[in-house]
Amino acid sequence: MIDRATSAANIASMLKTMQIHAAQAGGVDEQTTNGIAGSKSDFSQMVRSAIGQTNDMQVESSQAAQAFERGEAVPLTDLVLKMQKASLAFETTLQVRNKVLKAYEEVMNMPV
Image 1 (cartoon, one colour):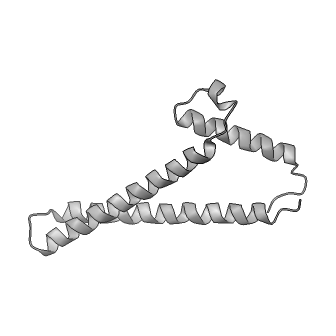
Image 2 (spheres, rainbow, N blue to C red):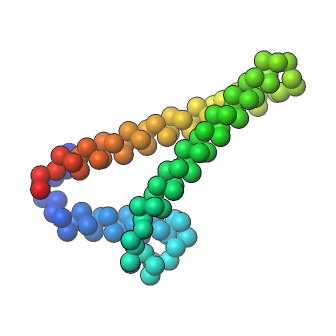
């Protein structure tokens, strides 16, 4: 739950700090982040990339399982490892989605 003592200035400060950290993680210097205007496209690109990687892992896992079922020489350990990686990536993506939705709901329920 968000404390009522949280002011608009505190929220703006937190957002600015998050933008700076995100930009630094992406390899952008702090001077560039002082005038961030397009962070929305950066975030959406990161989300697309993460979902794409998760999808690639799912496809690779499925292809390895099909190859194993056809009797091709696929080591069982590699198959299980690919399946676990795909499962973990999917669960992580799902949890991130849930956290983003929860944060969105909390922001929407804030009194103005």
